[in-house]
Amino acid sequence: MSKVLAQLLEELGSGRLRVVDLTQPLSPQTPLLPLPPQFNNTPAFKIWELSHYDERGPAWYWNGFETGEHTGTHFDAPIHWVSGKDLPDNSVDRISPRKFIGPACVIDISVEAARDPNYLLTPERIRRWEDEHGRIPVGAWVLLRTDWSKRKDPKDYINATENGPHTPGLTKESSALLAQERDVLGIGVETVGTDAGQAFTFDPPFPNHYLMHGSGKFGLASLCNLDQLPAAGAVVVAAPLKIVGGSGSPLRVFAVTP
Image (cartoon, rainbow, N blue to C red; front, side, top):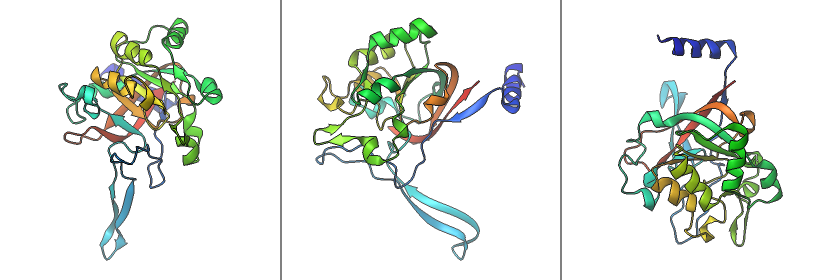
């Protein structure tokens, strides 16, 4: 075993490093992103029992389940959006597993989001973070802390009115900066999707999806526990299921942090 791996195991075993679960529970109550009725909406998570140490299977318990690729805490691959549809290795089964692991840069806009649910991360705010913590490295996961995952009522979490959801996100310019100038792995958010709730009104619509996936980058949605991570210094592992041709996948995301 390499010294680096041996040291990692020692640090984890001693508690000097800890593992933080960034994944929300997946159940039939998991909130879903509401689309207008003319579009297909993702199916809610459904689970049913196959056997439970009974006549259906005397020595085992297991379940069947079905859901959409983008339900709960999930991964967005480039093929998910029209801008990434022709890129190579753009589906979850073809992405190199090396790209599921990267340093975490946590930008905390929870105060701003509490004041304004439509708050958008600007390039100026990103550069202020870099002035304090250093330039965002190539291959980083940029995680947007909003504390939105603390909204346990699904209605409050989606926060929709007659003109659509109201949740924080990024400006078009911020997505372009991170994808094209910083060459990040992708964006992670606590909201149900990686774009702001009102992003369907932007130009282009859903600009984070358009720019990130068009640049071959990824998205992580419905994260939690970002308040347990430092601004810099943690490592995130976000590995989707290897669905052939998949546009995304529910996943278990975790961070290794001091």
